[in-house]
Image (tube, rainbow, N blue to C red; front, side, top):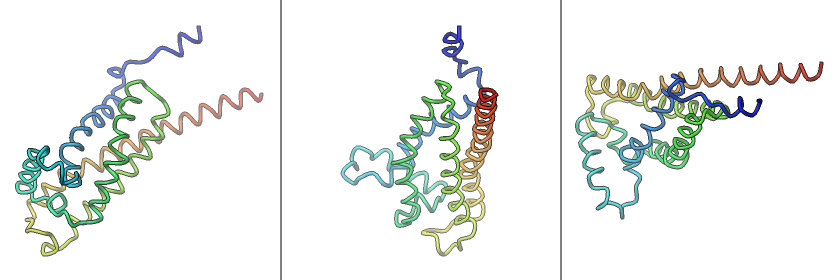
Length: 185
């Protein structure tokens, strides 16, 4: 009887918060591969990724994003490399774990969320506190507002995930501690 209960899985569609996180990670895979990482792809891929380069040029021209438009920003390129080496593989792991309702993902999502917040926050700070002449091209106040609208969700959603998953980790700890104290008695 215990084995049957242990193998029963609540479907993802019945777990709203997990579904939101699942969609977040699944949608990040193509966004990361086809937009965010384009500036750091090796030059020999140029002919293969020409449409991606053209899309990115359109994005930079349209939204005046100084980070995606300035390939010389070492700190930003470091964030892109972290996204390639750490985050992209994690997106697959997180989506799989959320789909399969793995409890252990909660702690990993705390780590991921804190990492994302600490990478996007400097982008927002730089965007809002850097003088216009220090950007590679002029960025109007309206364009800065639009860029804030584009980047801010990437702080808010991970912040929500951090709080949600931290609460889960705490409840798992409390349940484990309660179970441990019952065994001792």
